Amino acid sequence: MSDLKIGVFGRLVAAIALMCPLVVDAIPKVVVSIMPVHSLVAGVMTGVGVPELLIPGNQSPHTFSLSPSSVRRLGAADLVVWVGGQLETPLAKVLKANVEDAPIIELITLPGLERLPVREAGGWDTHGHDGSHDRDDHASQAHPVDPHIWLSPVNAVLIATRIFEVLSDMDPTNADAYHRNTVQLIQRIAELDNNIEASFASVRDRPYIVFHDAYQLFEHHYRLRAVGSVTVNPERLPGARTISEVRSKIVKSGARCVFSEPQFEPRLVATLIEGTRARAGTLDPVGYGLSPGPDAYFLLMTGLATAIIDCLSE
Image 1 (spheres, rainbow, N blue to C red):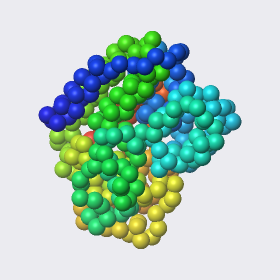
Image 2: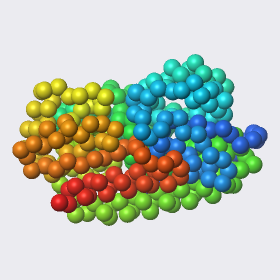
Image 3: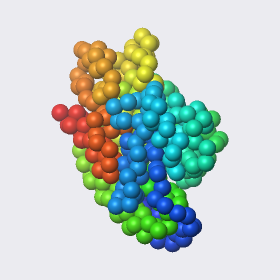
Image 4: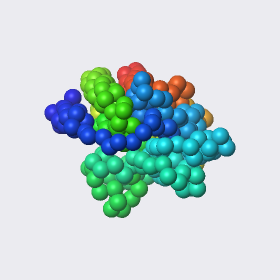
């Protein structure tokens, strides 16, 4: 891990040690929108309570529908954690209508978060950004930011730290347990980061294309060479122009792999790579098929790294 990353992890661990929680009663009922964030919250709450997962990993956070019982759980929550309306789009109105007194943590607004603007589908040489990233000015973004914020380990640490702060204020009786869990969680994220960083050494410069532009925080953090995406919105199939652009990008860039996602029909990827040297692979940004719990985030991140390495290595 770089000195910068070590500094971020170290400063956050030190900050946690200095927290002074406010006095509030009871173990909070926590509802979390998506699997990766739920896993981080579960890590902070280990041995104290179990957060509820709102959107199963086999549903898209962009188009899910909530059952009446899920809406009731939101209404009964003491704390709600979600990324924001750009990701869990249907949830915005539900929260407004059903959550009155409980605090809501909208993670996309956290100060210091690493953010990158959304790119257009196709080849990113003409549509992408310059690789710079923003850590604070979410309100002034001229374009929407990539909401898949958990795919940066640095962001995962920031998320865990904020959850710790809020839970310790709400439940001071268990503040020591939240503190201990969060320090262990941050250390575990640092170890994960080191392992993934080392694993990419032999394939870092090999080009590939993703199904939709969900992974750029992961790519940016590990300095990978993704060169395009098939679509911006995974719920919409790309048009003929974008398909032609992606096929051209595969050939010109020498892309080794084109990745689909487990929730979506892989036939489009098969069409894109037909007649090229590219292989088909699968990436999962949200935890499709994983069981909820503290390990899910680590399985998801390791699974992404393994899928990329396996496809690019052949």
